[in-house]
Amino acid sequence: MSAVDELARAYDAIAPDYDRQLAGDAWMRQVLWHHYLTVFRPGDHVLDVGCGTGTDALFLAGRQVRVTGVDASPGMIALLRDKAAAAGVADRIDARVLDFAALDGWPAGAFDGIISAFAGLNTVPSLVPFAASAARLLRPRGRLVVHLLNRWSLWEWLGLVGRGNWRQARALGQRRERSFVIGGQTIRHYPFTPGESVRQFATAGFTLRRAYGLGILRPPHTVRRIPPLAVDALDRLERPVRGQPWLVGRGRLFVLDLEAPDRRTSAATGLTRHSDA
Image 1 (tube, one colour):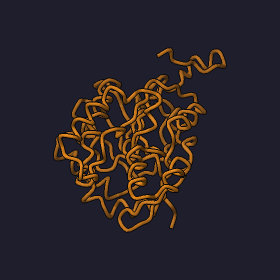
Image 2 (cartoon, one colour):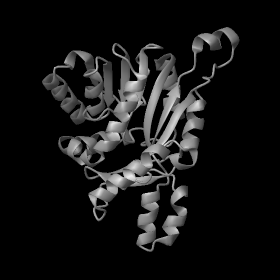
Image 3 (tube, rainbow, N blue to C red):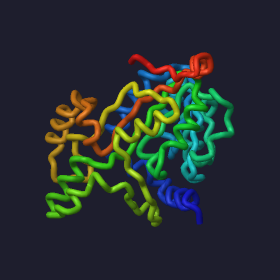
Image 4 (cartoon, rainbow, N blue to C red):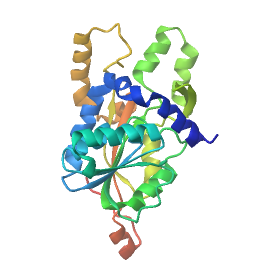
C-alpha cells in the first residue's frame, strides 16, 4: 500500500469524528479565518489543499470566495460535499479526491490563492515539489497561506521535562520525522522549522509576507490541568508577540503567508520580483 493510500485510509477512518477532534483548536481556526479575510476577496478562487471536511472551504464560500478543495480521503470529501449542500454553498465549492502531489491538472495561474491548514503539508519530507506546483498554479503575486506543524514547541518541551525525559527534550528540535496513529494507521509526519520552510518555498520564487506562531504560550487543549482563566490569560499574552521572529518557531504550529512570483516581470527581465512588504 502506498503512503497516499495509507493516508487516505487513516483519514477515512476518522472522517465522521474529525470535526470533534479539532474542536479544541477552534481558537486557532478563528485566527486563520481572520487572516484569510485580510488576503482573499469575494470572487477570488482559492485552492484548499488537504481540505479535510471543508471547515475552511465552507467559511470562505460563505464570504463569496470560490473554493476548490482537494484531499486524499474520499470520506473527508464526501462529508465536505454534504456540508456544502446543507449550507447552500455547493455552487461555490468544487470538492475533489486528490493528493496534493498531483496538482498539475490545472492550467498555470488558475487560482488567486492557496491555503493548507492543520499540518496538511506535513506528510511529506520536503515542501519543494509542492512549492513548485503552487507557484505555477497561482496567478502572479497570488497568495499562499500555510499552517504547518512546528519541529520544536515550548509546551511539548515542557511536557518532556516534566516527565523527566531530558534526553528527548534536548533532542526535540532535531527530530525531523514523527509518527502519529491516525485511524489505526501509523502516519509519518515531517515537522519543519519556519526558516527551512521559507527557504524551501523560496526555491519556487515565493517571498514571505508574514509569519507567526500559534500555541506559543497558550497550552494545547489536551493539557487539562490548566484552568480556563489561565488559558485565556496566556492567550492574551501570546497574541501581541506571535509574529516576533524569535517566537514564531516556538508554537505548536506556525503560519506562513507567502507571495507567488510575478512571472510577468520574471519573463521580461529574467529575474524574480520580490515584494517590498
